[in-house]
Image (cartoon, rainbow, N blue to C red; front, side, top):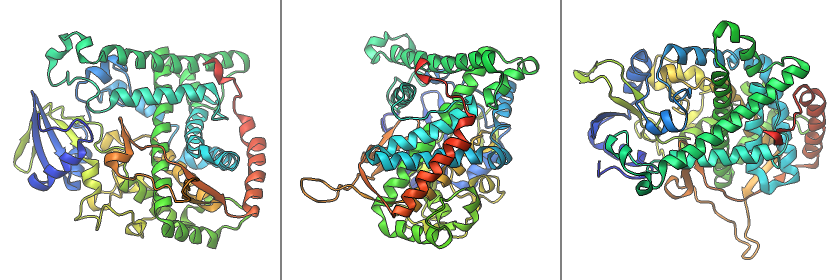
Length: 494
């Protein structure tokens, strides 16, 4: 245990994988941890054996203090978990994304461009507003129209506090050394009090949004939203108010910060690799004119954009290690018995930097995905482990239920930003030199449950006046044809 680093453990896990192989075990206190850095082992244990490898290890912090035990991400694979996942997945299928959510995604990404034209220095917050407003609309039927709204500021504060308390080493290892639970918390950084604050912030936000929907239903009846359907089905599903509030809130949060982190890494890659940006813009310009923005009809015509999205998620994954799985039964693998209760740890960083799979893995090179033209869900479900494009969305029965929505969100932002702007390094006004951002995962990324690039400035130059005019016209159309359909409730009351 003393050999375990206190931050960014995936570097050490990857180092050990080179020494001990793609599947090896660690003994940490009473716990057995199986580290998976080989895609064939991942396919066998987490996909093919998902019926016995989908539980979660016990976590006092995440299952008791932060969530009360009913957070979809941290629950065991119980019948209740399967029901909750089924209910939320029904609104996030590939068909729903194509038929129902595509106009919203286009409209919200148009507003993102429009906002970037007004205040380009806030580019990252405009992306965060976009990702949050998409899921807020789908889940609650309510938009997040401005980065200056009190709700978004409150949500961003919650995300920051959630990341801080979940960072590796931020709390004592009570799951490994249970006796630490009885040590007065003042000697351990007041970890229980800090977790309680985050829990209370989260509950107040989720319950406040739930209450807004209930009041809206009294005024105008149900809307076309996830939470409205959950409330309508309450008689048949027997879900409690708390379960509905929690499921909606967890879905909203999970769909916001992860995509925003990927998109920040995309921007980072573009300013560091101008030749790649220009190649992508040449592909876009060949098929999309200046007076039309890219949309969901352009997926098949922009294969290099798809390659950039995949390479971004490989190069700077949103997690270094996946959320742990736990075996619910003994399992024999390659003549070795993995005991019931073993923790299965997906070494995403090691998988994404496997030199046998990726030449020069430290380099950002979208061409390594030439010919990989499908969305990630298709590759995640492939029987061939070598056909998995990346591991950003998890595995098996724990595969992210929002994978179809997330992939399309990424496409809308990446294609539109490259169509609209030259994305370049900011320039130091005193020296006239470009400000080179820190792209190192060791020093340039924050670590919580997700890896996210630290803030960095950029320069956004609109590529032509024709494109500026097209953005303005598309924004007016979005306000008229799409945004007017959603609840304009004042979120400052949440």
